[in-house]
Length: 270
Length: 132
Image 1 (cartoon, rainbow over the protein chains, first blue to last red):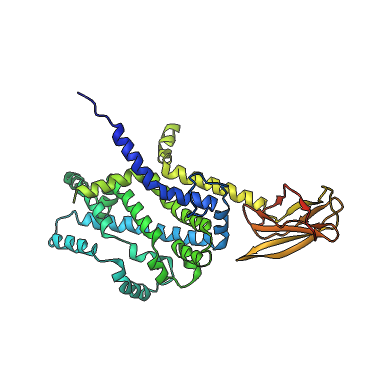
Image 2: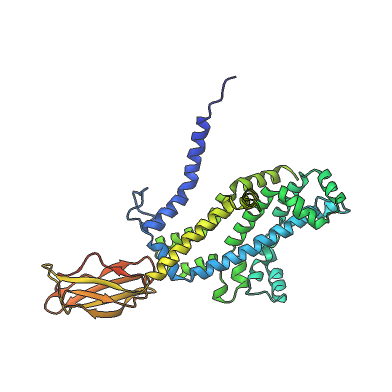
């Protein structure tokens, strides 16, 4: 059998990747050189590379505090997403009356933009006394329909006989989720972790509304604050962007295999 | 407990989700130790005249970046060998200038530090080659 030539595909993919990575490279290059982004002819190689824009950002605003706030809020969001979405996903794999209606309800929730729910979300958070707190900052992202469906798709792939066998052995529903289903749904868990992290990490609107004290602000708010008085320094601005991006990028690179598997499973089963 | 069972129990630690954060923690911890032992705010250097001779009793000023501009923070005079020493510099972004009546003044040079109050000895002396 004649083997297919793969190099044209690889060349095309490399070219597309280069085009997609170019803006990111440009941000990185500007963050270490501070070169004028509108300079002509543009220079691919950074001249006079130095880390001082990063140092300026670190000291210009309370970066460590904002970073810690973002980490705490993201950690709470991730933990809540894994626990609540796994429970919801498992419930949706069971047979019960009105299941189709519940599924439809979840699907319809995906069509409502977050902006439309901000006022009730704010009122509920206020009634719970969680305004200007870590819990309040992460509350609206505690569970998302997409991630519930990712878990549901993964749990649907587990043979029914395995769950029945666990029941016969006397395991409770709770134990079945954590001892049987979750270990078999690693890719779905990775997808949940990454998606909830990215959504929480990049969230701007909700922290803007719910925080009152500067000490509770997260990195996206810090970026906006930084922009307000450092608008003349492109290098420092781009350095800030890289510093905000880096944790998400690192998490994605570490878990990309499971993430892609989880998304692919979610896309093909339902 | 046998060595083999202990090794197999610790196997879960050998994955990228543990190793990468651990490496990062080590690097960050090391950097913080370095900063803690080198942040006395000491800035030292020399002042010479246009011929390269050390200048005694020259005024050396340290300017600190303050939100939008540099402001003078402290001043010292050089010793008989033209050496100066600032202590308690709080900033990471400073400028230093020197002058002496009858000899001249130097350029105000920018000194970028890797962290606030980093101890630094200037590699190049301040040269009083400009008219006062």
